[in-house]
Image (cartoon, rainbow, N blue to C red; front, side, top):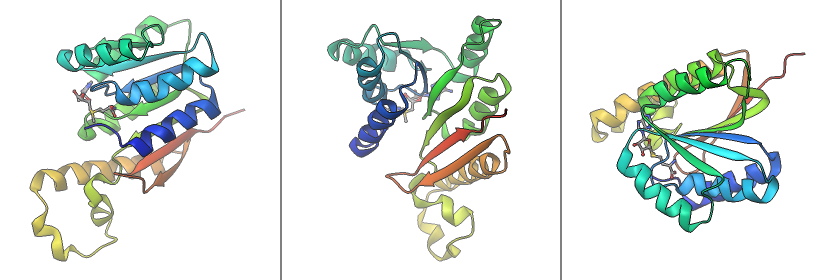
Length: 202
Ligand SMILES: C[S@@+](CC[C@H](N)C(=O)[O-])C[C@H]1O[C@@H](n2cnc3c(N)ncnc32)[C@H](O)[C@@H]1O
């Protein structure tokens, strides 16, 4: 379930380039992507922090071990619980302070991508010109078929579940593309990676 080494290198590179102060990850698993980003954060800014939202306690336990081994415990922290609830909590905690995230990595439940995106936008958690990276936006090479770019000839070979998720991810991609507050580009990297940039409104 982890991102590929190439994606990890890209995340690390992007964090080095953008030098975000606050990073939010949705979907921590074993901590691989958090460490890819967190190791760049620790190089660029001494006070920069990454918060990773993860629903599975066992995953957090394992990820915390790797984070400790990587000597990044002061940079990376995990919040246990469903990402939707944790985003609400973050919003409550930040009410008044309006601390936003400059860099958000979305990689939890693919069926819920639209919910995560909408919550982030509703609570204004992404800073102006901040970026959101989303993994699996071409889900198993099936999303472009949902979008009608390839005829349905081979579709029977694909499991119902993959098709169902691909349909949800396709709807998410359209939802983002049609949102005037952001610009998006989809890179055909590994399982597909979107770079979403919030437009600065002056
Ligand atoms: C694809 S894995 C993340 C991989 C990780 N980003 C990496 O590349 O190292 C997805 C993770 O999201 C977690 N997850 C699934 N649904 C979630 C939810 N609603 N809220 C928070 N975490 C969730 C899963 O437990 C799993 O650990």
